[in-house]
Length: 563
Image 1 (cartoon, one colour):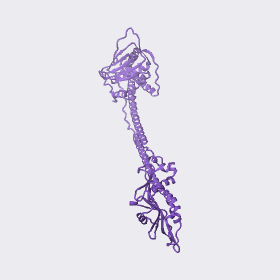
Image 2 (tube, helix red, strand yellow; image 1 turned 30 degrees about the vertical axis):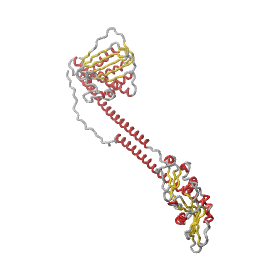
Image 3 (cartoon, helix red, strand yellow; image 1 turned 135 degrees about the vertical axis):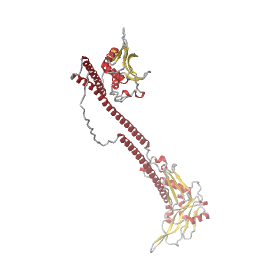
Image 4 (cartoon, helix red, strand yellow; image 1 turned 90 degrees about the horizontal axis):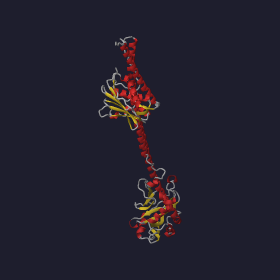
């Protein structure tokens, strides 16, 4: 047969290349999103820490205010106790520096106003008068030893308002509270000068009792801050004497975490300090907020997880796009090959370049064979398209499977082409199963086509049909290189091909169509590794049964190509 089909040489056109700006990779955007989420989490945590520092500073400032308010309240309490008793003597200035001074007994009622000592012994409590003109000391009440008189003469000094003098050494437990009587000088530059001091000497525990009475006198902090917590439970308070010894303390125990700066009362020589316990600080308005670090870390982890999922999805989309491009290229090649053969032999017949009836019949056979290959490929693409739209419908009918399988094998003969592989069938003639004939045809044609493509250049492909526990089992086994264990699940996905060489034909959707049609029947399909090597594709269809048969036909073995 003479074959001369040529086309005039053409000059290839240079491809037109348009430069476009490279788009920002989505992976970079995902990385930037994760980085931004991390920065936001860091800033939120830093804001929380800043709020904590501000809250602690505010609490310490409030503690300083509370200590100051305690001293003011104590000063007012002492003034309210002693001012009425001392007023008759020191209330009005003297007229002359030579006037005689009232006796200390004139202020004896001041002793009755002061609280008793905790020990219950009021011995040593007395009133006194110190004359600043000559330094003499006069007392009334309990006898005053010479050491006490000398101590008063040395420590009592002119002050404005209520003054105090604190004992030391043997007189450490004594404290003197006094006010100063002045003398007024008239004329040019009128002024007042100290004349004498009148007061009481009591034990320190009596002064501590005055502080206890002063505590509820006023709120140490605004109610908007304390939430109605009483002063006695609000803060840990302590008052110390000039020598640093503890005079009085009240409130719950507290450390130095929320302690304020000490407040000093120089006129009375007292130093107060306040601190908030953590339990009380938790109820104040400016308390440290609960740490949001776990929530921020959780959100950051979720963001990272979403970024990883998005990145994997992006990789999957890119892989799918690549597979689709490979599919387009493969289908184009698969379509071009039969179309080229059909066009070649059709033009040969049209131009009358055949010698005899045998060559004409051979040319027509090639055209029919390639047309069937083309129809099979188009049917696969259409079936995959229906599966993508969830439009796969089958109409199963119970029927013997062996005759249908043999018919499918005969239909496959033209598709085998010039393959040197031999097909052997082992069919159980008694198997009945509900199947859709067209769907089963598509399933077996795809499996046989796959076996002939990848089963090696020579050898045998075995097609088996059997019954196993009400399941019709169809096996297509080849002697090729087999399917790697890591790919036995992936090959059922669309566009997946183990061998991507251009010389190996295939569209990458044949096995995907097989799985879709098998699942439409309610069955399963898988790949196994035979002991002798190669690959065994197994299709299991449920609802099968066995029918009686008088004389089953012998196994069929078909060598291809057909003559």
